[in-house]
Length: 190
Image (cartoon, rainbow, N blue to C red; front, top):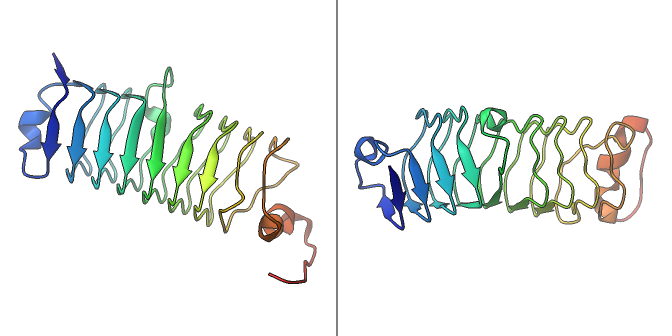
């Protein structure tokens, strides 16, 4: 059964809400979905605002054209989600220790997110934007970062010899994150 155009709030009984498994153009506001098994659920054109999805299980879940704003999304393995059509944007989200291993995330926007310890290994992030994100201990290995925009982000470490970075954009302040694996010292104004 498909649920369309509904707004769900933290006051709603999510056990009742999640008897349905397909949601289109729905809004979830302040809902606690932490550690919930969302296997095989379908979310299309949905908005999640100030929700807790920490440790949610996403086996074969469909996430298509969804927006996550102010959500806690720690410890989530997005590699288990349905790969075909996966598309989402993340604004002001806490995404620590999550994984996007082997995900195709072309043109994904991360705005003001904390991405501490996030695994982007083998990801296709071409043309994605990391706007004002904290990428402390995030892993980029064998990733396609071509035409990505990292100009306003901080604390990243990206090895240019282990990732594709053609036409990626960085600020001068981001140079240490590109050069640290070469064990050189960069001095000057910041």
